Image 1 (cartoon, rainbow, N blue to C red):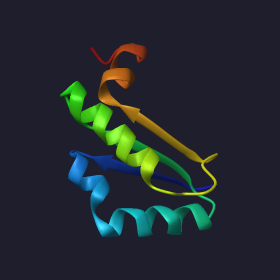
Image 2 (cartoon, helix red, strand yellow; image 1 turned 180 degrees about the vertical axis):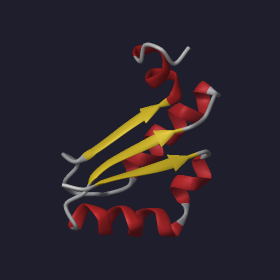
Image 3 (spheres, rainbow, N blue to C red; image 1 turned 90 degrees about the vertical axis):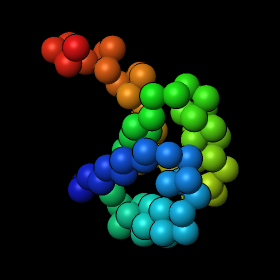
Length: 79
């Protein structure tokens, strides 16, 4: 299974028309997908997570949404 990573730097990145089409294309191609929310403002992260949940994707078993706030503390050696 191949992997794909989306680096999202703003809420507007999720709202772009190409984001959803590329995401669905990769889902249909059986990719493991990680969406990394690369924002430092917690309000923006919350809004981006809500926007991502609003995108109707059907099957989400191959998609992980993480943010820098949750990713950095759990990885030793990245501080």
